[in-house]
Length: 402
Image 1 (tube, helix red, strand yellow):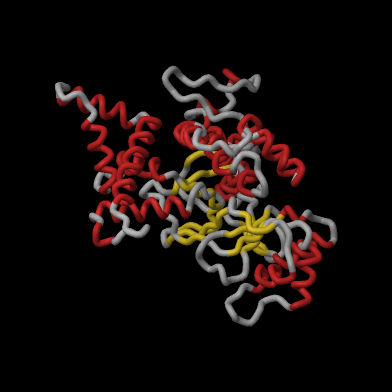
Image 2 (cartoon, rainbow, N blue to C red):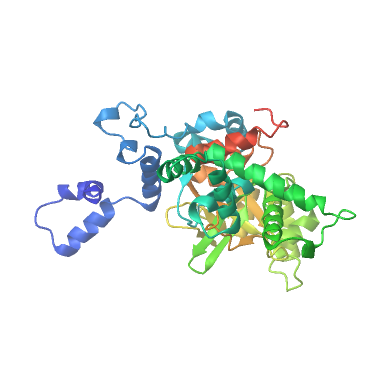
């Protein structure tokens, strides 16, 4: 029924067209990939078809969720108003686009989407719910079970555990306490500030590895450049490296540091400095391929560029056209971001990384001096569990003026 509604304009064609004509007409009347992404966002935000505008909310009012369901995510301009003001100063077109439709929600991994790093307590709570064979997920489940009153029946125990496991805040706090206890026990065995791996159990070694990875990747937000059954390639979009470019940095961005014949001449490097020398967005994209030329990401369909996914209007490449466009005054230097290094094959099955679909301006905006960190902005746009996770993490910060 939904597909028929989306193709309804085809019903206005003259009667009895050929089968081929009908196929072409239906295809042209269907949604573009970009329209489908926005439709999906509305569907999820409204908890189903109630997220679409119908006669019940045709006046533009927000749909009221059925009793017992979570409220929809907040409006984009309520999440990070100071970030919006900065975006307006950097790129007014993106600012307008954000106001008209700034959204994010959890989704399957896809090119043009995001991967957001979860804190370790959230990762372990995810494993408790979705990976029952994981060591620390099972430990957390046992920790919750131990808190159930001992005189509870089997049915009552299961009911209580199900209720507790559905409480994201409770599970987060329980996992956080477990991590602190394990890491304190590990630290107590240190000699001269070092702990011998042989002195640790297999579970403790695993916890140390998980803890170190969570620290290294703390609150990273990554743009998915490519995703397939063979893996994914992403770049961290909230790890800025430089806001201006020297001749040396320009050479590194364009030609890398791998010792191979440089793809760009000294003249192109000089042009790059003229275009981006005083204002630029340069980021550490990840730990892999840092000696390779930087990846250019932007929102313009330039000669030599490639769209990440059909309809996403997110592009990579087109270096020469970007340089010429900035020098000609057609584009602002902040329309473009340069990523040195990348992440490869970030895992989503264990809860360390959460896949998020988002509106184009969320993925394209610069992350240079944001008043509210991008990680919090994205999670709060998602609403639900991720927004609650953001709020719990914000309670630990006394360095932000929000």
